[in-house]
Length: 513
Image (cartoon, rainbow, N blue to C red; front, side, top):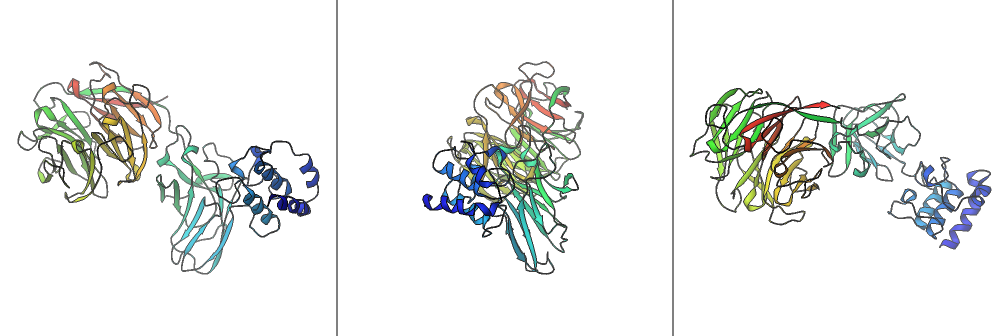
């Protein structure tokens, strides 16, 4: 096959213009892959030609190092098929640049995907009033942006076309292309307006499980993906409240904390068998619970005004209104559906789903807001599908679920159900490592905070698990911690930490570096 392709490449030299023969003969031993713009364009002139074909063939026979950026046929390797695909572009049998595609879509709606599979246009019914030819093409000449993800620029046409219904543009990305302080769940689809990249629309979604970002569009333009880096912050001690005792605003081994939309705090005061409600500055507001209903409260969450409390002694989830009036409860000791063995924490989402870490059964259970069992997953062990004493749980942006796998010293991120997206952390005392981690909290900027209990500190990560900052150290002074078990992040960015061993709540405030 190789013997046949090379003569064909030479015969087609005239299709690429004058000067190609000289270019082929003077081509260096290493193809100029650093100049690649379009897939397969080795010489960087923006067109398919013999120079490009010969460069691919040199890689095939081992004269040059294979480069995945010349994977013209999309099979994940460099081979004869790539040279053939490029030759088909030369003679007009395939659309150039590779990745381009066009399709006529009418009022019935339809999908158009670039031939490299990176960009998509989705038209719902009646988005286009009449049959129209739509196109998707990769773009290599465009105004730069310092935070653009590589390979994400696509022109979707016809340019300026106005939709009469629902239409979406979707672009896939490689998680490895996200910059060090970039936040995956904060990726935005942007469009080119003149020479400036602007936000492509208010209705956007990031599917970090499928590695894609989408935007609902009214018209068509040139699009790309932007991942703005998170600012570098330092967290300084700001305030503290509480002291050992059983009076109002005093604590005995507090464990969990939650904050509502008004900034009120709810703390499980485990040693005193109660929940305390405090204002943002720590002023006492209300208290409820006793040795019968809440003998050992641990995890706590507030979802649309309802307070969910997990009690480890009774293995029940109890719900209250914001003033402590009981609503419903469910659970009980056991290993069946809806039963718990040392329940650890609770989290709720805006779609009324409740997650409980069933610590002793080494699993996570999902319920409706009324306590109806939905599903569970996990089991003892250290594999991707296992837990070892799971503890803190939190819903982050896009309804992503974070679970602290305490015994395995790691955090697992899920799509909201049992579909694992990623895992980060390991045992140790270095940045991004944990020792008996407990609580976890999501922040308004889509970062997550983990209580690294055994190391007496709090660590901050991006939504994809990249370490950002840490604060706290062992001790009892301001800013020092003794076995922190939970944290919560207010709307202004303040981090409230349950300093369990010191029977107090500490507040840390971010400051830009």
